[in-house]
Image 1 (tube, helix red, strand yellow):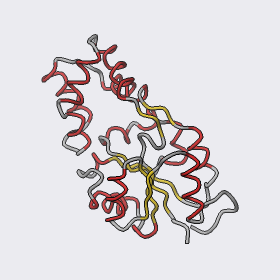
Image 2 (image 1 turned 180 degrees about the vertical axis):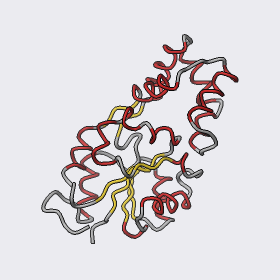
Image 3 (image 1 turned 180 degrees about the horizontal axis):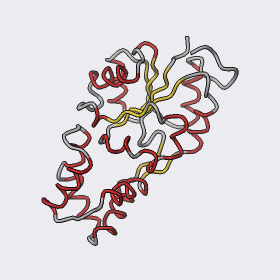
Length: 209
């Protein structure tokens, strides 16, 4: 039987993500150079801690102010994430053509704030993914931990056996398989379509979900 849930990674699967573009946008807002943003957001570990759910967006901004002297409004922080994130329309088109044949979800290693503000960061994805958008920050666990996948599916109401997961990182795919999900590594759109077809997911008449 085809999977009931197609669970996709966000960055570098559904969207091209550029940390460089994001840092440039934040640097312009803060009036500093991009290297300073790189150190404050990434090298410091703040972003990874946000991904693990240690703090939300307001605390994130407070830490940037108190630890780095960077006064960045949360709205500008969100806008910079949007600037660094470009939805891959051809892949989204493939998914849209499967509407009615499978349910869709996103599982991303990001702070919960990204899912909370997804309408502003990835509005193109919302018609298909709005109700099933899980970030690791809301779970307190990140991929590739198998437990993270189980918690994600518990939230979404699907079983591992009924879920197909796609990620650009082999380690995350391995973690999904350890949790009992079917999974494969995204390579390109043609490969993506072929892997879906191998599992009975092709455009056509909707079937019972």
